[in-house]
Image 1 (cartoon, rainbow, N blue to C red):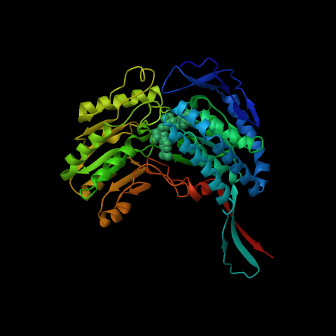
Image 2: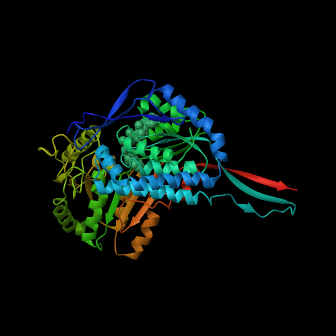
Image 3: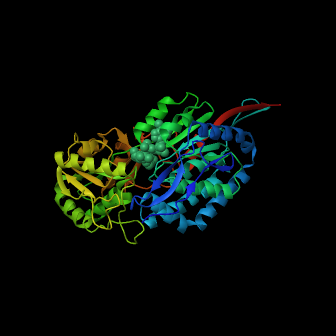
Length: 486
Ligand code: NAD
């Protein structure tokens, strides 16, 4: 499916849709059919990054003084725009990222909901008043915006992650530079467009695309940048965290190796459904995706049989074809990485199912693999330790609750973890014993509420500030303590 009239999409800097000063663009490719170029985007350079920094810096003084009610109107206006265009934008999101259409639409509507949430929450977010020992003096804290903030996001949730970073930043009065992933930049463009048509003033939100190696350091290390909110790989996030000036706040949401524990009192059908949903939705490319399943020895066989029977029924194909369970992997790099881990799994563990690259007219031009399951996995194996970020499940046998917790915690990551059990004591203890920022009991490792804090422990996060809910607003504001006497 060639695309003769490929559209070119521009940066949005200082209120203008501008071409990069480099004169170069790069292609956004459809992972379901690599002959289809979704669009061409600006290959920005240092000069473009500096223009975005200057624009955001120049717009801050007026935006911070804009009444919060007016800032909220911009967010709700953008939410309405996204809702109105959800079907068209969902098509575009599926075309650039690969996920099934229904999931794309959900993500867009959820992003609109996030904008609406912060439009309301931001209006009641304020400081505190403290009792004073001086009758002629009050003591209170007030919250103010930080200034210019940079938002850097991955391709797997290319609108909901930007929305949950940009909305709290804007409502709190910050100005934003937004760099989406080069592998799915179109839906971030649509989010920017939504805020622009809702009346965001020039320079308050700047959208810039390009290679991290060309513009990443400028956008994160410039002293004018007061905060960096980043979601992506642990390697990149830790590198940015180390490189920014001491005065720059960071919020880094990074990788995971998320366990799901199946106890012997669990409803095994439910455990299988939670494994499939957590492990294979988004083709295993969710940061909170289930990648290790720790199963009690006495139910392992029964669980594995049920899992295999269901996985064999999963439908794999283009996200634009109704009824597909799994779309393609998002990029060639993803495909190569996942296939390499599958080869490693075959060498070190017992290969139970899947992991083949699919071929045939429907698949030949896309990054399709069948979901893979390995068993007899032990703690030292690479498929048990390293983030794969693909549809690969490693089954580890455990002999007790304590053994399960020890193995689940034996990882450098701590993003999300789940247990399936009917035992209230294990439910209760799990929340305390597990080393993860998101703890799920009888639910999938994936998914999080927009009004509750989200983030990881250990190397899954820098453990500075949470995002989502009020945590998002805390990150983007600083506190002054004011003593006011008469
Ligand atoms: P990535 O780290 O390659 O890229 C993420 C973003 O950072 C991209 O926009 C990229 O261009 C940019 N980037 C990379 N290096 C940079 C640098 N040095 N300076 C500035 N920007 C830089 O990650 P990815 O492949 O896009 O996404 C997959 C990863 O994201 C996985 O590790 C996954 O676990 C993680 N992730 C985490 C969460 C979470 O909330 N914890 C959510 C989604 C994805």
